Length: 272
Image 1 (cartoon, rainbow, N blue to C red):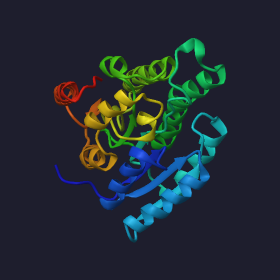
Image 2: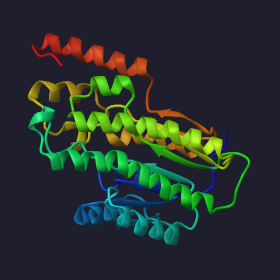
Image 3: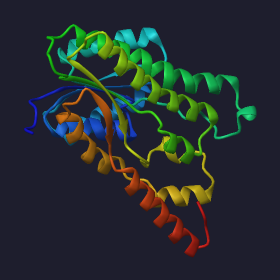
């Protein structure tokens, strides 16, 4: 399959971590990229870094909290103004909450923020992406694609995050499946919806709030954002299917890394 021409790419939560690495990978491929994030200072730094990494690349950034409908509406207008055509929209923005605590020890506001960002934010952002894509030239095959990052049952079981985080990310996977069905039932042929599975990525979202033993385990099994992006970007750019999962690595490979890390850890006197 040949590489597509310059694509219009949107990455929410692109100010750091995997979102930043994905944006960089798309820029290096020659695509036009728009990112967003909640932290204006972090976003400004990301925009500067991306511009330095890829000289002459087309990259733009806007402050946007995906849990707020007004922010997403403004961001959608910004995206259309900067890109014109949107070929890939990646819902990467997410929240694990301020604390990794049992449900009964969490602040209600923390629960609401996590669910609003992960679940409601993904739904609202997907709706904005669809609104844009359906206004673009139609096609009998999927040429525009939306990617959501949810939890598989295995991912939810492995996670040590709070109940709101695991519940909302598991629900995101359902949103992806239901939205794909809805698109098919409404005879929309030009848009595909996919689950994006990056595996364990060394980001602040993954590493924060863990005890020392868990941190050592994550250091052993998690991958660097740039490495994951190098694998995922070509898959995202060349995708042609209407639905399905796009993964960094197979479940078997991730399981093998976890087992090897556990074995190594037991030799060193710690367990995951």
